[in-house]
Length: 491
Image (tube, rainbow, N blue to C red; front, side, top):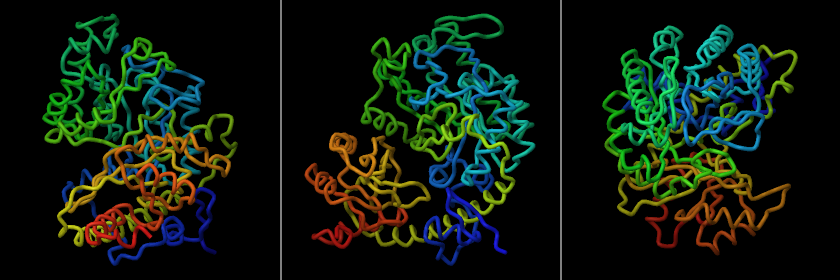
């Protein structure tokens, strides 16, 4: 009897059928290869290939989950207000429930049994994972003993991190995120009212200087021991934006793997100091300008979703409310490991097929000389154009030219269809969200919204449904620059 594998309610009878059900199967002759990108060390690729935060490609295929076991924090940030029992805000520091290590481990087991895409367990608070270390370590120990195939990672402000680096290495945790917002203690004093270190509260410049020294020490220690470090920086206009390029160069020089420059979330309703005092976040153009200025520094992460401290699922989605403690099953299925292995086998084949298809499309586009084209994509994951325009809650923005395809950012938008009917005011908001992006690729769209978007100067194309994102973009670019009448993709 064939093994039955369930993925999101869809049952298939084999690993091959799993792949076909997800994305139409694998047709490249190179299927089965696990080779990574040509420009990346194989050892590094092995660490990041399944981590959705450390690899832009991986975020199309793999899910993460955070467990909220570390509520205590040793610093105060002017952009932070940790909220509990909150299901309506999507930002760091927010959780629906705080968990003990025992509860967290049970929750991870339940999610791992139901979500084959799960590859990473992270602890990102809602306080600081390194400061609340006993709970963090107890959670990781329990999960690691039962789910050895799940990667472990944690996020920290860095103040307590040097005290636990040796334990982190011993536990085979090879991904750590450090939040470092500035190299200047004077600027730091505007971001952090106080830090609590060695049993004493330190305020202003003194506290910021202690924090910075510990952050640099943590970064150096982790890199020296082979741990991949992602540095998160919150971009705060008028406060730390002028020093972001220098920070980017410094963390690169110290060996950081990625730098994630993310926008300040500043809404008075969130109750943060910055929100209540009118400190604004950066515009999309300001964020992009700073990222462009960092082109010669550390590699940038541009697909971050600034997740809650209890997020579950693919980046861009949050299934956390499906897995609250009161909804966990009494008996957890025992076939989760088999499902995850089958899914990872499919991803390896799919990646090979996707790369082969992209290389073929790139060869044709490379001969063209035309300006870059910016395109928005509706996708549910898998690296394919597989989402209805009306169901998109975000658009992934790409730029394509003769040199290839580059992911730029994502833009959030409320989905247009509600209960099967489109809402006009939401469509107006989507038009605003897509400002500067003249083309959208999606799996389907109704004629009404298509016409409305066209009136706004945005062309929506659904002729590429289920195609790989990169190949569709390259084909579109080649088509537009070969044919004055815009060619087949416009049909």
